[in-house]
Image 1: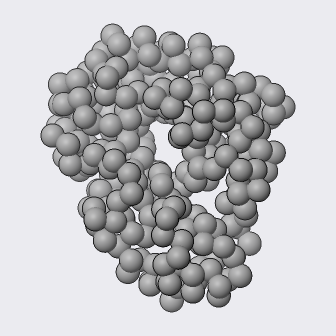
Image 2: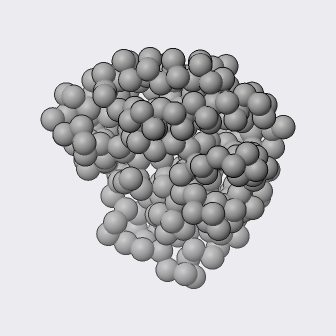
Length: 259
């Protein structure tokens, strides 16, 4: 899985953004059924000329579609919308449906993987107790947990659990828009002669996360990927790590404590 991906949340016409991303070297696109743009992502992949096998495509099933049979139908519908024979990653979008439906949904995704419709399965917005219920049920662990993650909201107990158990951590909201004026971010960006967004993406990558910055602007999409020509020194990572405010630093729905 390419670590850097393009998020397409709140992009009602994401085909141009996906085309720009693929042109600038992205090979990972993160969609979801509730984003209502699966068909646009599929169209962009075909129009790009990049072979399907070189693009890692994710979608997610929201809580209103949880359940074994409904999940299997959703997988088939997603494949039809994308126009693909398989999906690289299918996630449970949130844990909000409750234990029984979460586990039935997970079993359905295991079936979809077994059938070759999905190559990798995982979860999103899962706290430690949600991950533990899968383990307690004796089921295969998720390959990935996608959570809100940036210097202001580091969700360290979840990250620690995932790292201990070999679960890849994907970071949504990695650019934490609205806080670009923070003096620490500004100081680090000035030192490296980059912009704040590049510092934030680089911070995620250096922690081993898979950041999913979203943008509809081709110039920003290109800039967000221009992060491999520098590395943040330990003395610059430390003040960024010190920005953590726990859950108070969240800028999204972040339902990791749901029952």
